[in-house]
Image 1 (cartoon, rainbow, N blue to C red):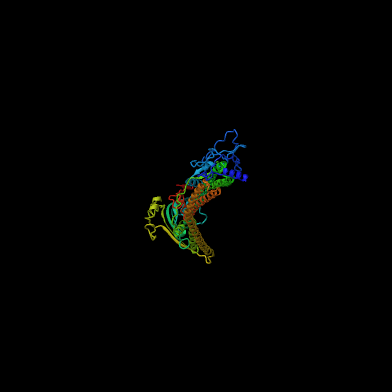
Image 2: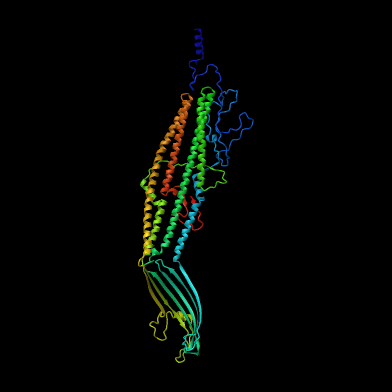
Length: 639
């Protein structure tokens, strides 16, 4: 009985007195000195080198450079760790272990710096660098300049050509035997010049002026060579107008300008290819930039989550040292801290990978580059949901989509081929007309019997004879203007009776047009489906923007409430970690919704051909760009 009484008295003395509970923590207040708790074992993060021991006399290392500095050398991530406790001592709660509500939270970027050098880039800087250094766009601009030269070459078929020539000859044929000789020798010097041009309707017009000075040795008696010879000079001016024109095959302006139309269509095709190439490049660059933005913000979220867990770990460690929390709570938070730091490392690696992809699209070299990372500085503002007219977007895509435009240009080119092939099935019927007036002047020998004096020929007399020709024999039917002329005309007909080759070529081109039209319909169907999917993706992402933003707000509110309950002892570390996971998941979903909205917007702008105007970009040599440079093309220019 006495032993039971002593036991009850000792238990009463050890029990807390009424009214000794701490209203802040909910823990009993000590009314007498307690025994010191066992020391807390220090658990550094695995695989992290923290440098020298705290007891070492070596000076601490300097603070690593800021991650914003592009020249910062690679340094390992310094993970938070519990302070080392010397063996044989008992940790006492000190000022450093007491966490006050007014204590500033550590900067996550300083707590977890990047392990690689990075630089800040805005989207406009990225696009400008990509357009200035894109080799494919430079080549496409050169291709457009080449097609412009081809147009000039095709137009050159209708240039005016200048023709000129000189001919000299000498002929000696003395009389032999009883030969009747009209002349026994002749020499001449002839020159000609003129102009020729091909007509757009298919014919050719030629105007040539020929001048000839000839000297002929004529015998005085055509049957007696010993009677002597005399020299007779003549001057000839002969303009000639020749018109050659087809009447069936190869006749018509559209047929004969087919090469010009093909060259112009080729230029339009190159411009469409350049626009499509530029849109593809800008599309990939913008999406890569948004991927970098996603990776950067995801890294910030994971840094923030790890920093919050680190701060909680420090608080709980202080409470464990004071005996108000158990070692199990500290181990639980430490396990979560290690997991979050692992997520930080993975997010950092993702940021580097996305940065390398973006720099590859920008056309940068990596052999001597020290700055690899990219820190996006463009914050997308246009994330508000908007009404989208699906029919209007599909119609806009049909009108401006580079892929559809390229197919339509191909059909137009084949229609020109069909026109030429159909014309080739016609028979050949060519007409030729030539009119050649002449002005001649010939030496006049004296005739004593009739009293005709001698007269020398000359160029002025030859020219005047165009209009005042005089016939000495009075037998010419016309002695007025153009009394001396030559006029001729001809028709040439050729017909392929079977016509297998032109018929087969024409039918082949018709089938190619039909196939191209089917391909256009198929592409229109695919573009329509892509527009519908992009519009639906924008609508879905718009709804997710509202939902996820509300989820983040609620998760932050729940985390603050859970931390407050934890501080007063009404919650556990598991509950706080669960709320932290909820917030991290909500932030990830909100960020995913934002990036998905941006990606869907870029996809829709690409399909409707509005990507470049939406970002203020303009390509030199593209359709509708005004004056086209014809020399030294430089590809794209950023505005």
